[in-house]
Amino acid sequence: MFPMILFLFSLFLSSTHASEQEFCVANLKLPPTPAGYACKDPAIVTVDDFVFTGLGKAGNTSNIIKAAVTPAFVAQFPGVNGLGLSLARLDLAPGGVVPMHTHPGANEVLTVIQGSIVAGFISSANAVYYKTLKKGDTMLFPLGLLHFQINAVGVTSVALVGFSSSNPGLQILDFALFGNDLPTELISKSTFLDPAIIKKLKSVLGGTG
Ligand SMILES: *[C@@H]1O[C@H](CO)[C@@H](O)[C@H](O)[C@H]1NC(C)=O
Image (cartoon, rainbow, N blue to C red; front, side):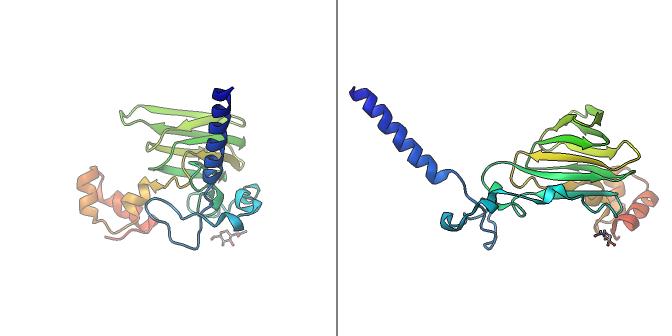
């Protein structure tokens, strides 16, 4: 009898403890720290902090890459703060591409819900994993690895994307190389690319030097 009471009591203790820690809706009014956002006062948290309504709407693909990512990361969806997950909608118009990029902070899982997408990643051993995904197919992209998505059909393709972080981060390779003022000479020496190609890409992607 006594051990049973002790067991129930410890269950009670652990559940009260858990309820204090069940969520930490981001307080977006305070700046984020390296450890994340401060928690919004639970007394003013509402169901709308846990609901995101933006992913039903197509993103605007009228841009150079003919692609739109609609994020539901912590900055847009404060309820994901501390839960170790977030999501996004990807719209790829015909000819659209999400150029080679990495998410330093998250694994990614992508499910095609319309159209077809060629997607792939490159491991740090430089092994290539790519495939043409059809509607309903899901592909994984491990944390930190370079990867891409390209529309594979003549109509807009759409995917829902999940991340194992509320703030996955993003670095696009071509923008890192050609979208800033890193001198052409240094890019050429560090990438073995022809300076003429570098200057051409800088002019398209907004880089100088
Ligand atoms: C989409 O983006 C383009 C370029 O920024 C802009 O001109 C256009 O008005 C936008 N379309 C919509 C429907 O918001």
